[in-house]
Length: 506
Figure 1 (tube, rainbow, N blue to C red):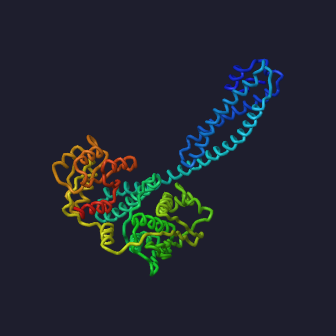
Figure 2: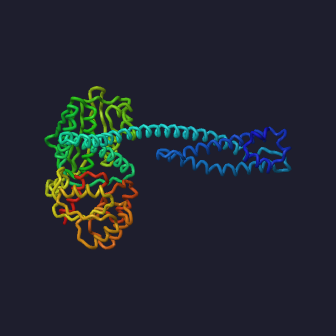
Figure 3: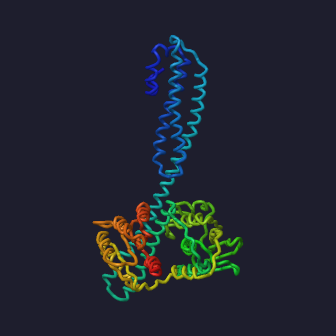
């Protein structure tokens, strides 16, 4: 037997427990050692595969990795049995006997080798899947870069043009394009944040009374201008007996339907987009109904049916290049529907259109002052907040000026503190209805300032107005006493909605 071909760890065991002469003219022992040697070599392959699997960062492979860890733990026990077997072979004055427990051990090793082959195949497949996932993520990042840079390019270019042309006609024309580019960038960032929030399990559904039919009609009105750009018409079809006064999370339902209608608009030219509400049943104060978004657009290839709901994927790469988008909209929609104990389904035919649909079971509400309060609070129009006293704790001069001008249009009395230390001092010196608190500031940040204020006042509303979108930072903010947060860049209507809640509760 060539000792160079024997694994180094096994060689040490042979040198320790067997004499040099015992390996001569003993074919049974040599065959036994050869089996053990192959097992040792397989261990090293397993270890290499395990190192590769440990680098896979997708949670889908956690179970395989855990099983492999358990398997490696068993190897220590097998190694102990092998050493004991060698000891038994060298007993009785170096005369070798084939003991029954050695045969059992060889049988165990043969079975173990078969099991290891199965694990190796699973790990290899996991590695292939991870590489495919990484390719998808790389493609997604490329699309994301394109989607972000496109509106940024328009914004930077138009600012330059406006500076050069300096005419009133050019100003009005360019300001509309700037507004559209900024909105596209804002929606893109919101999609990324929503996806991250859902993936982290940080979405909590509200229970708010609202008018479902009215909500759908508002969505149709708000998207009609965008639909007209593709020469499309949006129709709303509602069953006569539809139970419209419900209690759920209207903002998330709005997001679901808006995503689906926006998709229909994007992939339809000179066609019709229908939003159809069909009553199925009303039982035990719960309404069960079907929502359909039907378009006459390009349709989806049946071969791509499974991929469109996968993260970082669209039906085809060329689709994202032709029509735009990140491929996150349907993923977010599906996950939000899952939170509502529903799921999305669809039928489609190339060249004839697509019908996305889902069924909801939602508690029925009563049209009352609660509905009127909700509609006032969540209406699309901004309301005057004359007399509301706000302390804005913010260190960025541009952000301060923007916030002051926006809130100034609503009649808000804004006092400014350039950092958390000054913010705490001003809180002690004056009375405020609301504090808008940036989290990242020099001298004293928003976390420390909030902690100090909360030791003295548990009631004053503190709203984080921050660019820190990490859930670790936001969770920490909520734990120390922040009531809620608004992510920069913020939508002025969202800020108005938040502030009017505290305005009506003064």
